[in-house]
Image (tube, rainbow, N blue to C red; front, side, top):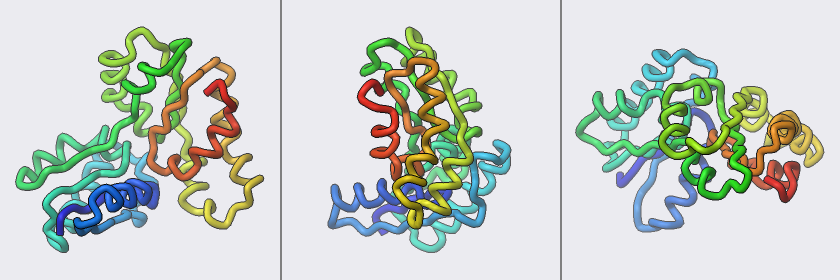
Length: 202
């Protein structure tokens, strides 16, 4: 097995498909830890233990050359510990694109849409300090939108999808954010709808 993708639900599927497209010759396994969903509402210790158990299963079942963590919450919370516990295998994380957002924002007001665990983690403060010190970041943890995508997205109407993103879009609009970071891989499934709802200003 060349690589395995670990996710806290089904949000990382686009990442796996992208990797397969870029490296079609490589074999890929995908583990969605839906039994422990939602990760974003757990304590740091519990997130780390759940993720560690998942990596242990991956290593035993597939022995991949690398593990890609397609989850911002796991990455900001547990990546360092996972690398310590499994030093024999490269573990690649996914973190909110604060650096990129700071590069493209015109008015220096950035929205971060993620899980509660991600937006409240000190790692996010470090990213803001290192890459967006001249910006104001307005963070919103949105477990309801994460749950909607995990459980209802594929049966929802277009109207229901649009309504589901409205609370987040309105939150960032009231602060004049011209850039919104999708800091949870679940939100990739709704990127087009979030963009449409936010309009050309974001």
